[in-house]
Amino acid sequence: MLDLVESKLSQHEAFRADVLAGLSQRQKTLPSRWLYDQRGSELFEEITRLDEYYLTRTETAILRRHAEEMGALCGERVVLLEYGAGAAIKSEILLDALRAPRMYAPIDIAADFLSQTVERFRDRFPDLPTRPIIADFTADFDIPADVPARPRAAFFPGSTLGNLLPLDACALLRRMREHVGSSGKAIIGVDLRKDIETLIAAYDDKQGVTAEFNLNLLVRINRELDGDFALDAFAHEARWNERESAIEMHIVSLKPQAVSVTGRSFAFAEGETIHTETCRKFDVAGFAHSAQRSGWRVDKLWSDPAGLFAVFGLSAET
Ligand code: AVJ
Image 1 (tube, rainbow, N blue to C red):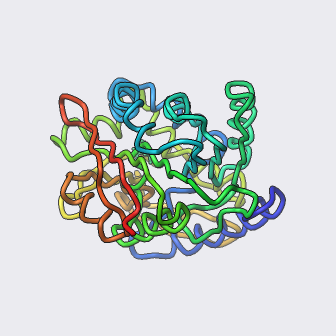
Image 2 (image 1 turned 135 degrees about the horizontal axis):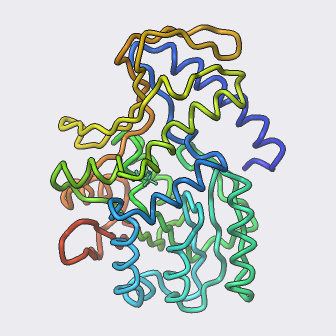
Image 3 (image 1 turned 60 degrees about the horizontal axis):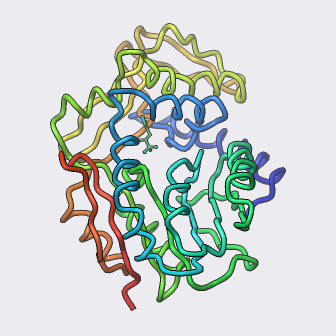
């Protein structure tokens, strides 16, 4: 686990390495985790309030309607580990339904954003120990020894699992399984496949908030890596990839141009893109299969009347 200073330094080095490597690929690609600097995290919170972005309100409604059952599945005196906590709005619903929860441990790479969440939780749940963990949950990391070992439940809402490659998604489900142990539980939210128009609109809203969220990555490169991206020479695009069953976010070059980053020059043809995020869309059978392959038993499935989103209740397979 990283302390604040360590995390900032290593993050900067990691960001620099990912950007230089990503812009050198035939299909230029940047890992989506770099979308979440302070401004990126704020823009994402704005996205969650957009009409087109149905995911957050649909999942929140499912959590509100079935919170008691989720609390019963998790059990008494549980330690709740939340992966990619961000603003942790949804965890309040689950924590309110848990029976005498023992601790809330939000895990996130955005250290600053995490400390704000912890502050808010200390007011909202004054009797609940809150233990932030600054870590990149897409890679192996250990839960600190001061977090009680049993019982534990993992909470992973928001369909963030969809940002990972299928093998990485299974690796993360397996990591969660290890973190919670043989008596552990998990509550995981995933967005379901649906008509392409609805999906594209959710990732390319009329107000342009998602466009700003995507292009903010260029702003970050200019600020932190001495880049000279001309923002008005690039545009946001959301695409449907049938083979991957995924929405992809791309940044499109509107003309032939060269961009300098940390003194290195990168050429862009007109129409060439930087692939910045993949958001996989699941079906129930596909998710259940991945969960079973990763040491989990699917105990519960909660969804909305229109079948837009699904929340799974999992138990560790012993
Ligand atoms: C936070 C990763 C779940 O994939 O829907 C929202 C991020 N990207 N709009 C998603 C996102 C563009 C979001 N996740």
